[in-house]
Image (tube, rainbow, N blue to C red; front, top):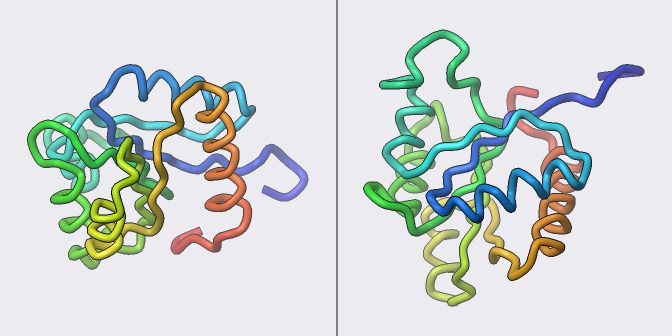
Length: 150
């Protein structure tokens, strides 16, 4: 927004680990990044959110995300399946998906890109790392990249 407050983007965090949700949420706040952070706990809930189903059916319950931060290993539909589903849907495929994983295994990384991930980040080992990663995500995705629909 010109001359006013910075534009708020919608970030959808798909993560089942409560500690990682806490780190991501607190890191955004500590880095003074004020976006609209939404959270789902697994791939099934992620797809319900994106399609406005189940608990996300009411108007305004699920604003379209500008960016999805997604763990690979979640209960139910995992991140790999959800990523493939998102990138094969013409209504969803333009939403950037950043994989957040504890794995730095080259097979997981290559598989994520093969399924359509826009980037792959290894989860930091400490809180300071989370703050730095969230700053980098904010600078790149909301400061440099031109997002579809914005």
